[in-house]
Amino acid sequence: MKVLSYGSLNIDNVYTVDHFVRSGETMSSLKMEVFSGGKGLNQSIALAKSGVSVWHAGAVGKKDGDFLLEQLEEVGVHTELISKLPVKTGHAIIQRDREGQNCILLFGGANQQVTREQADHVMEQFSEGDFLILQNEISEIGYIMQKAHEKKMKIVLNPSPMDEKIFTYPLDYVDYFILNEIEARDLCGHDGTGDELLELLAEKFPMAKIVLTLGEEGSIYKDQENAIRQPIFKVDVVDTTAAGDTFTGFFIGGLVLGETPRMAMENAAKASAIAVTRPGAAPSIPYRKELSEESSVSVK
Ligand code: RIB
Image (cartoon, rainbow, N blue to C red; front, side, top):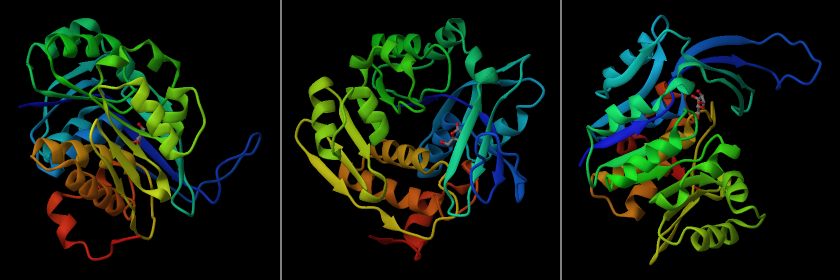
């Protein structure tokens, strides 16, 4: 079984700030750092660090994207399906406040230049039973899902960042949704508690397995037979960027390695707790062996 992560690659420009800049305000930042990021890249790195073999597909700029490929290769991610295009690499402008919370502004760049031709070439390398992991930061996602469905691949969708394009995708083909409360509300078109949202999602997508993350309230996994609740691990927060991506990578990585959904949920929660104790997106993601070494995290 192969794992394809088809998604964004960003250069994250991270500004440490006292508070998020307000409308009309000009403000000096306290520090500026550059990290590798992009939900796709972060999830590929989390999958690789969780112990599975991953192929990343997507696009970077010819002139400024090499360091992202190097970061993927350093942890063993296959990068031959990433195109180098004569455009700018995608980037993010991230404000990180004193509490470690963030707000993110994206420029799609090469991520929005993924074409059907590229997708055809990429999808030729995969077959029935292989996993496809997607977020919502590249072009042609609906087409990629269609191709993966024809091949009987297992489709994982993290509908983040949520926008109106999501509703144009063939969502009935999704095998696993991994999403937060806000994304769940938008997808259902209803407000409600975590449990209510989960029920609505299960009604709307009866064939899908759903992982709903609820911030401080932990996360819930639901399939046709089980519902599993996973509390968060309590840590001192430094930077929440890529916490969700780490969760997704370790949850799917765990399933690929044969873990039960319960074990995969616990390890995913622990890995993302460790990630928020460190600065940056991809560099904050732990290796699987750190999950048993880390003594500073405990279940809340
Ligand atoms: O999920 C965090 C990521 O979102 C950042 O790395 C940023 O690049 C955006 O894609």
